[in-house]
Image (cartoon, rainbow, N blue to C red; front, side, top):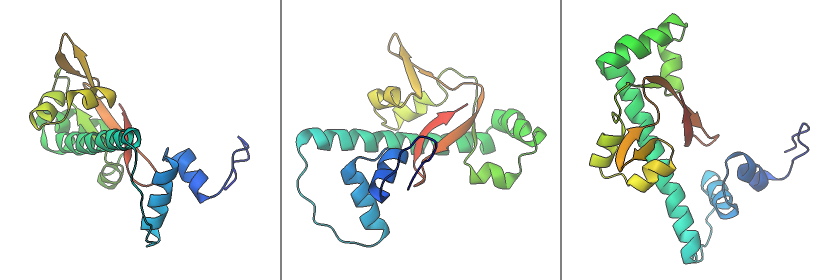
Length: 163
């Protein structure tokens, strides 16, 4: 691959590392899975295991949040009256809303955070994900009263949100 505007380029592994923010081992594993190539893995040291585990935890929380916001848009009264109305007034079709996993978060202070904590999601990871802010140990949703646009990686993972 070659990006003529930035001058960056390289092979498939470098592309995944640049655009998907994979580590080298993650890029190799991704390509191996994609093309059904069996690879022999060695043991990771504790620091690498911890980083991989943390990254995976953040992906899991982001996936949960995406589904939560999608369901809120479709199934809550505020989601329907505010969120869906907003999208429809701007010409978004149901197919577009579904294809891009668009969602809604009501104006309630902890509408997302409290259920996430009750389901067992770690407070530290909720904060690291940027979805929750803690003030005086009290969870507060970063996205309130907003339509939600998940940001997907090329492999389909949720990297973050815009609202």
